[in-house]
Image 1: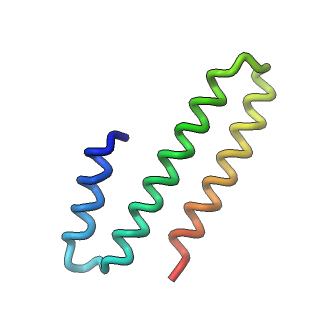
Image 2: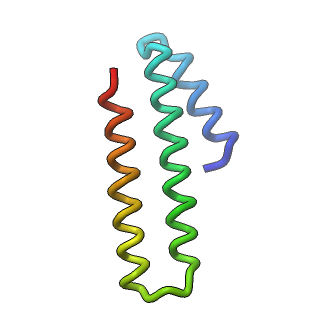
Amino acid sequence: MTNGRIKTITNSISACPIWPTQTAQKVGQMIDEIKQANAIMSNISATAQHDAVKAGFAAETFHGEGFNISAFSKSA
C-alpha cells in the first residue's frame, strides 16, 4: 500500500466523529504492521531456499504479525 493511501485512510478514520483519536492511531499501527508483514513475505519469497523452508518462514511471519495485529485491536 502506498504512503498516500495509508495517509488517506488514517485521515479518513480520524475525521470520522464516531471513532475516537485512539482508534485512528490503532488503525495506523495495524496498517504499519501489515506493511511490515508484506515486506517480510516479499523477502522470503525472493530467496533461493526450498519451498518448504519458505513456507515455514512465511507461516512464522503470518503467525507473529497476526498476533501483533490482534493485540493492537484488543488493547485499550
